[in-house]
Length: 409
Image (cartoon, rainbow, N blue to C red; front, side, top):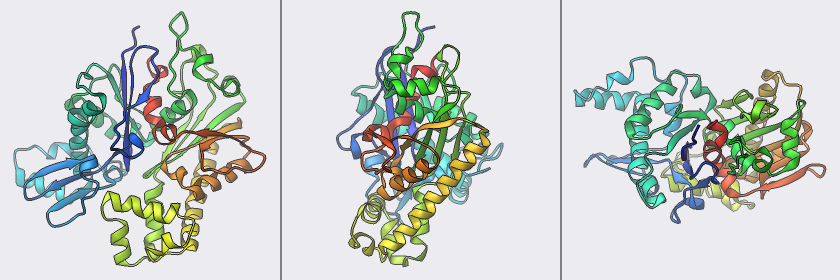
């Protein structure tokens, strides 16, 4: 069977990443634009000028604040993926025949509003942003997939997203949606490599360049754990690859929990003044400034700008890390695995926060992890071996993994 060129969208709560693979065994690459954060992070922001009914997205919306004239949509992914947010028939209520009824529904039903924003944002990606990053618009033949949290795959929202992507103009040869945790793990371990054997099967020896990792994945009693702390979810996956014909990770455990940097922000700002909260959570640019000042600063000046202390920040980070490690323990227990955790992987914007990365490394070491793939800034205990992940994999591994030929067998 021929393998089509592939495109994968990781629709993050703060940033969206897009990757492409050209050719059956081509190396996957993230699409870039020099004007984007890190060169490849597309802000997941939308805004509407209510007076002109004009929408802007991504970089054009990051500096806008909500006002009487500006309807700002930040972290709309949490409303879209809220438990039971969209019931059977809800979307059909937006029939387009009664604009006033549609306006009221969008104003008062967060999930419907978020779905409408998702439709507009994906249309903008399809019509403008992706063609700009590719340098052309001839990508409609690419087999497209969308990374979603694991709990979305098991919900009634998944087929609706499939229909939405098709209506926007994307195409695929299989399901549009795939597991974000599994795609992330594949992206980290393969680094976008897609070599094949003479018979056309994935060349695992070349795909997993680290021989130790390959031996681990082929072992029945060892596993590699992924912990990805994003803005909206923490994604977990456990790989143990000993499968016929190197068939992929579809049968390996994966889980997503609603826990991330947005929750960390909320905990930290619980005792902040209204004025400080407004400055911290204004535009997308202001939110990023708040996070850099509070989580990235090693002095008291950063938190003090928002009426916070280093102790406040430390307490909130400890609370998040405890919650993440509790989720890891529950995940491993639910997976009913007796595998030794040979290695673990830390990805996601949350793990770029030094306090989170360091504390997770310490917690995983206590759980028997001997090797850690982690951001450059992460410190590990003395008996743990560290392999540095570049920023492209820390933030973009899910998009990279979603283009893997392991999904195209």
